[in-house]
Length: 260
Image (cartoon, rainbow, N blue to C red; front, top):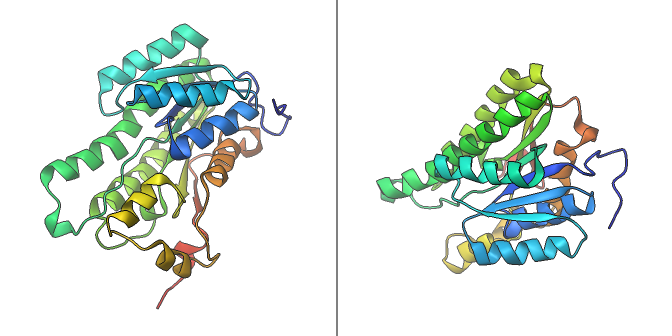
């Protein structure tokens, strides 16, 4: 295993990752495993969880699969109790579970709106609250909430997504100022377009064109899940020890480009 250096301070830390079975969540799990952390992956898909944990264990790390929906506050409470039983503490939470919402606003149904709010915002709150209770009591901890560049800039056909991801940014800032005196840091990570199965699925359904996205991005490429994971490690670890309440945007320059 790649040894953890003093720059991250993550060796032996318990890291909980929601939506940890695939995509950015799995990339984060692998990145933290390489830093010597102990992993607890929370997801609704038990088979994918088991496969993800096998991947993490192959890197020499301990990995606990926890099946739960972040939209169910009771299930989240039980999940964190299981993590307590296995590891005795929670040092880092990567609040990654989320869902895309890409549809003309006039066509969005109440169920689709509620689903986006339940997963992208309520789920982040439930997990942050569960982790925060433990971290505040311990006097230390780091939470990284996954927002999006569409939490800081707007786009058509994404009212539910922009609203919920923007909510994550303000939730992050509120928790940061509330829990800062307890040495609990809360930051957000706002990726742009990342090359994941989710993005490929949106292209297959005709909701976007990857070629057009690349042409619109100043760096002229998609981001990778490994790049997002590296930034999650940075925000969670000792290198960012004096950062809290910050949203780190990693979008290849998309949100800074006044495109005509």
